Length: 267
Image (cartoon, rainbow, N blue to C red; front, side, top):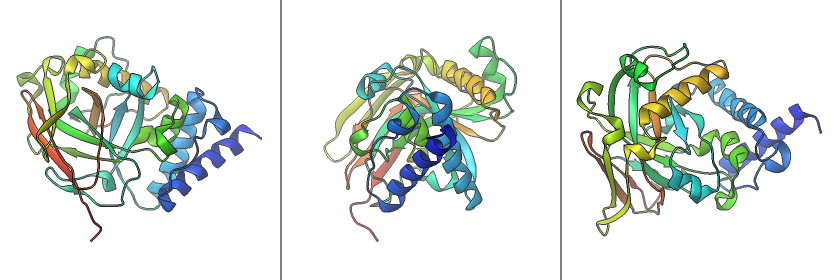
């Protein structure tokens, strides 16, 4: 099988899982477990189809930045994906029943960009002027691959296991908060249990370092970060499985709360 055929077949397998709402087998049998170039090619095929169907990219997400999440999934490198307009959930809103296959939630720091980042960055602190504001976010990750049985190649191909996301309505100037020092607590409102905890330092040592990693990776793939985009910088603690009827609230010091629920029936 040629490399291009393998990429197309992997993309088709993932699309089939999304459309049928039935998780599929991993795609590493087609593209390899760690061939990052091939995996991003698969991601690009399916994103292009969504753009052609009218979807608009509103930002990017960085995945696999937390050692806890890397251990959960058995991977050892960050990745990135695209955030589209149909992935947005308003703060306090609900993920529709049946929309996602195997959702999990993780709390993150979000950056809104005021300027393009299309030049090499030697020090993450150089990115501060490119950041318009920062806020709290919950990413609802999902996998089209059965049982979350993924390698780095599988999750990259699957748009970095993107699902949906919610960002707080409150945006804070970066001058008022130090992302590396924030403290996060994620609770499940049904029983009030704290289900995940962490700090900004759990995200590659500093969410700004994660942003710098993404900026370099995006330039490498010829698609630099752009002004107006939102960037989810990566989990601050372990991800948590979500079930119908659940409601989660993430509190991040200096950034306030953000919440999302999961509808327990289809309207």
